[in-house]
Amino acid sequence: MTELKNLDPAKLPRHVAIIMDGNGRWAKKRGMPRTFGHKAGVEALREIIKMSDELGIEALTVYAFSTENWKRSADEVGALMGLLLEYFTKELEELHRKNVRIRILGDIDGMPKGTERQQQALHKAIERTQNNTGLLLNIALNYGGQQEIVRAARILAEQTAQGSLKPEEITPERFASELYTHDEPEVDLIIRTSGELRLSNFLLWQCAYAEFYITDTLWPDFDREAYLTALQAFAGRNRRFGGV
Ligand code: FPP
Picture 1 (tube, rainbow, N blue to C red):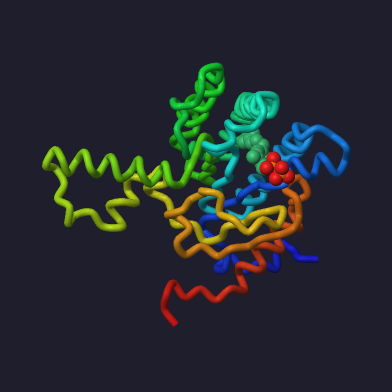
Picture 2: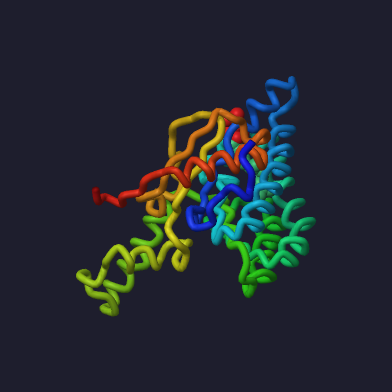
């Protein structure tokens, strides 16, 4: 069994990103509605946040809801929004106590009508934890990687049009400074559960040099042991960043 103490702290990722996939299949295998899988997914997430905090990982980014997920049935969207509200209402104080800083990647105010309570809860969570100095927890919500890049391009285009920015001043660093993750380390490790080999519009810029770890484990089954195995695999990677 992989043990926490066997992990070399120097070989831990600074920033871990996770595509929490497979909730629906997990529920189906049990003859239960998809929502049941999402509920179990929240439990799995709680444990991974706890462990990331214990390990001293700087940033954890999880894909909770994409700009495309609104296409799911009204029932499923409603259930996910319900879980989200419950999570941010019930867990906020506990996260705050743990010195976790919550950030939302995505367009909160662009969420559809009927999600006002969720929007309020998200703004409150950001505000409440903004001065915390522990784990940075990014929740990607109403998020798309292409949308994030276009948003940054528009900000820079406006500055260029106004004359406050010269085109030649647009460098990768300047560009990255307009992303939701502006002051964060790039993603070192991206984990996708349930075996799909896709990026699904997640952190397209930030994953430029990320190490991929794909596991067949469905998200609700992704426990401490599974996370340790992923971290162990990362520790054994030889990262070259384009060099030799
Ligand atoms: C993908 O599984 C999962 C999602 C689209 C939602 C992830 C959300 C959570 C784990 C819980 C909500 C988060 C918070 C912060 C409260 P899927 O439904 O696509 O599974 P499938 O591919 O098996 O159908």
